[in-house]
Image (cartoon, rainbow over all chains, first blue to last red):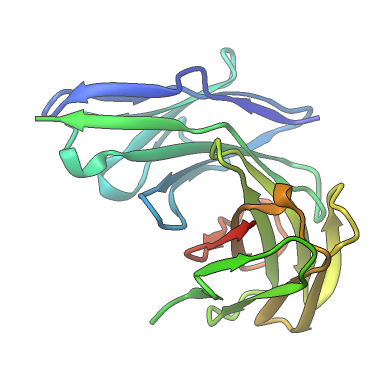
Length: 115
Length: 114
C-alpha cells in the first residue's frame, strides 16, 4: 500500500528566509509525487509534480521540490518565504499502478510565515 | 471562469435528512473525484468516476451514492445523515485516469450535521 508522511504539523519561518516542508513516501513501484496548497476556506491548488526525469522540480509561486529516491523523500522548498505563502501544504503520492490507482495525501503541514 | 464548481458552499442539516452536493467541471476532463476532509484536515478519497463509470469506491457507507449524469458532472447524494458525516467535501477532476495528471479541486462544501 502506498503512503505519505509529513512529519511536521507546522513549520514557522520568517519572511525572506528559506523554507522547507518535509515529505517522505512509500510505494511499491515508481512514484508519482505531488504537492498541493490549501489556503483558508479554499480548495487545494496544484503546486508541482514529479513524474520522471530531473530530481529538482520547479512549480508555481517560486516553489520547488527535490525528489530523492534513496531517502524516499520529496521535500518542498522555497528560497525566500513570503507572508502570503502561509497555508496548509499537502504532499501526495500516486503509485504507478495503472488506471485505477488513487492519490494518497499526507496529513498536511501548516506553514506560517511571519514578518 | 471557475474550473471546478460545487454547490452549495455550506450545508447545515439535521441528522436523518437526505442531502445532495453538486459538482461541475468545465475543463473537459474525463475523470472526477469526491474527497472528504475531516476536522483534522485529513483528506481521503471517496469515489472516482471516469467517463461516467465508477472506478474507485473506497470503504464508504452505502448511504453515500455518487451519480454522474455526464462526464462534466459528479453529484454526491447522502442518505440518513449522521453526525460523523460533518466534514468538508471536495470535488476534483483530472484530464484522464492516468497517474501522471494532476487533479483540480473545487472550493469545497462544508457539511454540518446537527
